[in-house]
Length: 117
Image 1 (tube, helix red, strand yellow):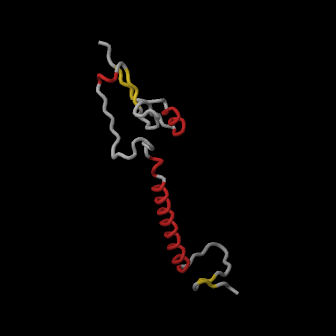
Image 2: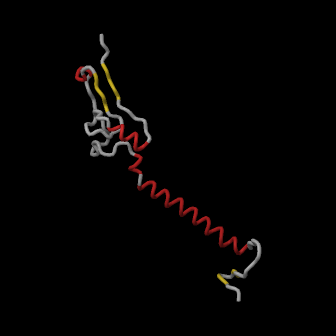
């Protein structure tokens, strides 16, 4: 006795024959699966957006982190953090080394030196 699902018969057949009834069932299911997968991946990529951020903890209560220094106050040399991982931020403490090893990045500090006159 052949199995009937919504007007489709599931009688064993040799080879691969698709009828119009099969296509009207398969195509919408495939489209729904693709759209669903896309929407779910977009949702989860947005939820993990913080992984793409550079500044994870420095001055998060301000709209923009800005530091300003007078050249006279710098002395002979100043080393500033550009990876945002330094515990002495805005000064570099070498945290970029660990950051680079973990992420494959190549960020380093900003070094400002006075020219000898």
